[in-house]
View 1 (cartoon, rainbow over the protein chains, first blue to last red):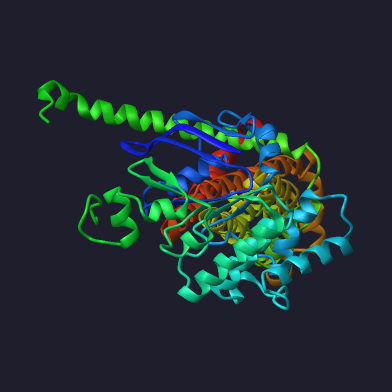
View 2 (tube, helix red, strand yellow):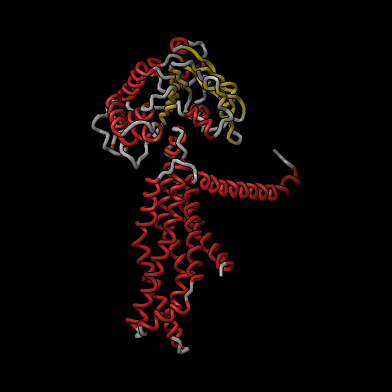
Length: 249
Length: 264
């Protein structure tokens, strides 16, 4: 379980997170929605230990990671898989080497043939069989996202973070990536935290949805609860209306 | 908001204070960066493959530019020093003059400047692009230390390749001077090399060696640091690359003067 309590973060005068409190249950898919530039990625980077909060605490199971550094933080990160917004594939490596990289570096007990088999299996699971020899700049945006998902999952992590994994893709690809995530979640039962603003598609895959607005979580609940929320802010956001409490700036 | 005349008068002092604090802070980060790299150099597992790739990139791929600039530097030295010495009837000292200029000063400095332009800028851009495309973050969240993977191999490669490149620059330069002084201007081969053996001793070679070694650290440290802490987007990478080349070049010249003063 991931537990975040009163998380605050400011960059200069700009207060991005103003007391985020959220619990993510083990094995669930929690999707954090909110406006672009509303602090979703900043929130995620705190969970990854890439940013330190000004105030508040973060627990991963019983471990308080707020102040952790170095090896102690790495021990928590070893349980993570992360899909970055742009994929963050290593551009000097082929797709195959990108996916094999975490195995080569972190699973030192595995032999080359086992690494090859596991990498090819993961490539097949994300529908990239035959594309392993290509470099990231030789494949499409959708394929890059799939490769990034394969790399995040190849070590079979307990917790997977997705930072807007479908941004910039066409609707068909958005659905394909979402269903891929859902299939892989059914298979591996990882805990997933995803930040996204793909409305309404995310309601099909989320088990719970949290709305982040003005640096706080305004509502958390199952997709149906969020969709039927009486909160005008949520209704405006999910329906994409211009008029309402959210100013279109 | 009106802050009053005192506040207005104090504003330049405030700005100066802020700039000074930022400067001290960035110096601290800069030093800490090298300190962290030094610590990670001795913590296994060692990234031998990455080190070899960096040696190839910084060292082997700089060979042609080093040979070219070394040859022409030696040729220019041979020509100019010969003309000057001939006014005093001292052409016999052409060999030691060329060798000492190259070994003590021009070899380490020019080789370092050349490698900064060729490899240093590319290193900053490469690491900077890895930063803005979240590849460094990806390494971090994989619990793989980016210092160990990216920075240590670069700095160790700098330590190993700069003295070798400088040695090549010196040797090629000395033969450039030989080509002009002996083959074109008629000085005897025995005089050129014989006087060189008399006047160039081990302390001169060691001065050049220490200079090139320290330039190797300075260039790779500055270029890796600037890439690692690059700003946002393409503009950030471009600014980081420019700053890396300018700062490396300035530090090479300043450090050269300092070492030239303290070394025998």
